[in-house]
Amino acid sequence: MFLQIENFLTPDEVQTLTGIARQAPFHDGRRSNPHNTTKNNLIADPNEPLGQQASQLALAAFHRSQEARNFVYPQRVALPQLTVYRAGMNYGAHVDAAFLPLGQPPLRSDVSCTIFVSDPSTYEGGELIAYFGSEELRIKGKPGSAVFYPSTFVHQVSPVISGERLVVITFIESQIPDQMQRHILYTLNEVRALEGLKMDWRNLTQMDYAIGNLHRLWAR
Image 1 (tube, one colour):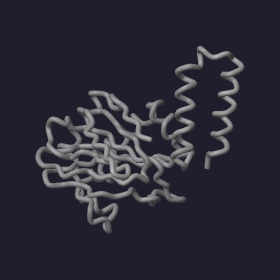
Image 2 (cartoon, rainbow, N blue to C red):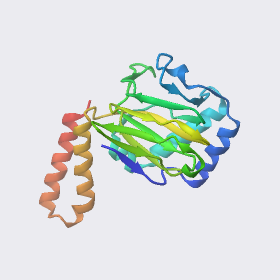
Image 3 (cartoon, rainbow, N blue to C red):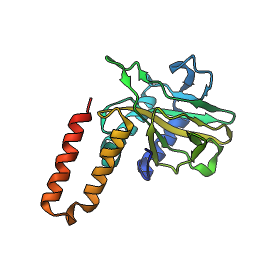
Image 4 (tube, rainbow, N blue to C red):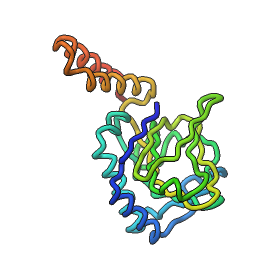
């Protein structure tokens, strides 16, 4: 259900985003969700050129990543937002909003994405924590890495104790809304990619038949 991609951004893109963060105007992250009292971060102003540059850079990285597209089956992607957590900031346990008012109809958030920009050695705290019943997964990615996870999962960003956590976040509406169906299709495609050249053409054709028709059946 989780996908982590190393080198989602190039080193030059990480450097560019870091430079943008030094100059771009930021506003209170609660502007996008004023009723969420657990949210305490800053977001680059999407109406300013630097904020727009950061968004387009991250969006281009998503569009060129076949691995990401194969995992999420994107239908629509929210404009990514450059986000910073400074000392004392956090985002308490929450589930991402089901629908985002981004056009008509609103964008349904099926998959959430965090792209890490800061070197984890430069800040203390700030882990992305996802909860699975009584278990939890803590992620503190390397610069340029990205993690994709279902928007339905309870997750949080732990308080930043020192330093600065710089990330880019976005949300994806998938062609396959059901996360289990989406994961089944992703798994079948991974098996095909790894084993397809070894398979008898009849079996490979049968697998293509199953994958293609499950995609048709489950797409919304």
